[in-house]
Image (cartoon, rainbow, N blue to C red):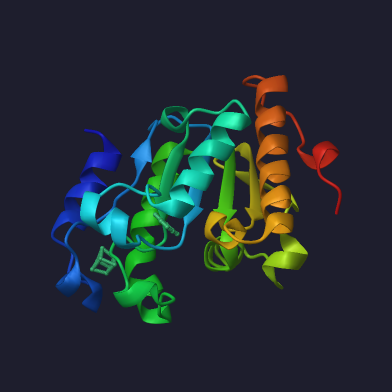
Length: 205
Ligand code: URA
Ligand code: SF4
């Protein structure tokens, strides 16, 4: 049995928070179930709710193009969100929604066991860092930092970066977003499958 499919079967009929009422489609996540990198966003937007796929609207376009520029293919990574259903008018996730929905994300991460978790934006960053017992201060302060953890007997790197939507009209943030993704890609390609590596050499504090 594929664990990801089992989790998706639960999400399909989920009514654990109020967001099920307005959803057209849940957005579980997509990509390689054995990916070395998992990207975690906030929640589906309009296009994602329409299609059931993560990051396919304007923020998704930025993410896909940036991955491609860095030599990463969307199908080789795994992309998902904290919430699997769209909040009305794309409002911020409520704490109780995060509490209800995040066990699905945690299940996805446990199933994939990635080498790197890239947190897109402040909501994903604060959730993931706190999940691993780390402090989150702000995205502008913490972005590009690499947190090296030990999980499943393996190294796990957690990297908060800006949300691609934040880069849409802000050139400086876009530069920083692209640089961070390029550095993550360089680390993965230059170290192949070895987990005995540190990203630290690629990132300043
Ligand atoms: N923003 C997100 O955080 N996730 C998506 O899937 C799309 C936009
Ligand atoms: Fe269930 Fe998550 Fe959708 Fe809420 S957002 S209904 S917890 S799948």
